[in-house]
Length: 238
Image (cartoon, rainbow, N blue to C red; front, side, top):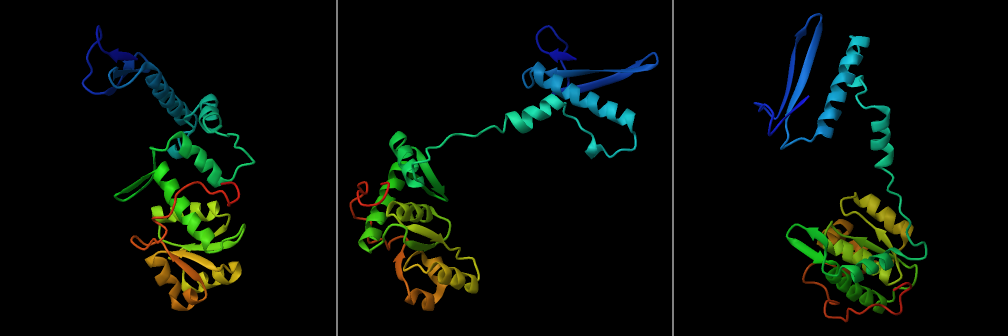
């Protein structure tokens, strides 16, 4: 195995494998560009090649896709060591409280991106607080089910956070579901309040909307937009 760099022969390609006969043996060498590869990477590639050749010699008829290239140590590292991502989270905090901690740490960082719109953690939190105050004014109580039927958008995230901040329990309804499924979810959860955009209102239909107090989350239809955006003192965990 040779590296192409100062003091070495220059390779014609980024990675070259040369083979030739030496008596009754076939010998080979790897040449590589040091600007692209380090020695540890090439050593791994050499190990994969040797594992492939040894497996082919042991059983020439086996499918190539079943040949094990990784060593037991590397397999353990990739599947176990790198996947040990467990982390302890405070068991006494709700989702929206954890979110507010992040707001305090990085208020200017981008939290949500959708098409051409981007919201920072601070702006997302402010919008959710305004909507939460509006929901409380509409009578949302702790653990009260509040349905939300909107397309994927920043408004969906605002709505979910606002329901939690107001103390409610959100009932997600996908506007892409068939009408029978939407009606079944509404009948089972029995929410009195609904957050919806134009797509959600169209999916539910006039009959379903007639039995609910609907809050329109469509752009330009947000009466709470000018409300105070301070933290909530009356919602659990706010």
